[in-house]
Structures are given as C-alpha cells and as structure tokens.
Image (cartoon, rainbow, N blue to C red; front, side, top):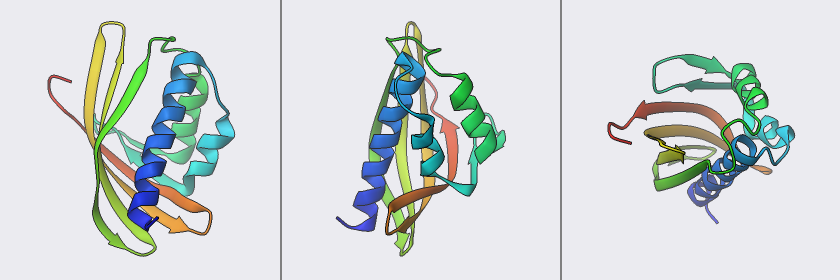
Length: 130
C-alpha cells in the first residue's frame, strides 16, 4: 500500500469512527486523539479555525448526540499531491440524520510515518444542496 492509499484508508476509517461515535455513542476517544497531530488545525466550512483541543472537545461533547440514524459517507477520495512523508488528499463528506443533509468538500494534509498517516490539517467547504 502506498502513502496515498494509506491516507485514503485512514479517511474512510476515521469517518466510520465519527459516525459510530456521534451517532450511536460507540467507540473510544483515544482513536481520535491518536489520529490528530499535536499541531492539528481544522478550518470548518463556515471559516472557523479549530485546533486539536477544540476538535477533540467537540467530539467528546458530541458522543451519541446525533442519534442512531446518523450517517456519514465519504466519496471522491483522491490524492492531490504526494511528497513523502506528506500527502494532500481530497474527499467529499456527506452527512445525514433525520431530515438534515449536509455535504462538504475537504482537503486534508497528512504526514505518513511508521505507524501510518497522521492528520495535520483539514479545510472544509460547504457544497450547496447537500
């Protein structure tokens, strides 16, 4: 498996963990803490800049709050640039639960090491019409 394939697998696996955690309250916080580099930064679709601590706090507070019907799908996963040990990936994330549906286009920067990919940065942009 090359670095881009490893990052694509991590994108799918982490979003499956988000779905289980936020929807049914299943999983472990240490999965999320291990995924994000200490200097991790995320820019949300509405332009807020969140550091690792804020993202982990959001996840901890959100355990099971979306309900058992909450779903996440990840599509169009592809590498934009790879220069070992860094890989820039693109993907579309769709979320739905009840009547609410959202979609966002994301770019994520990973550092790939012996233990696998680590998330360094994510930038999300809303997709109109979800």
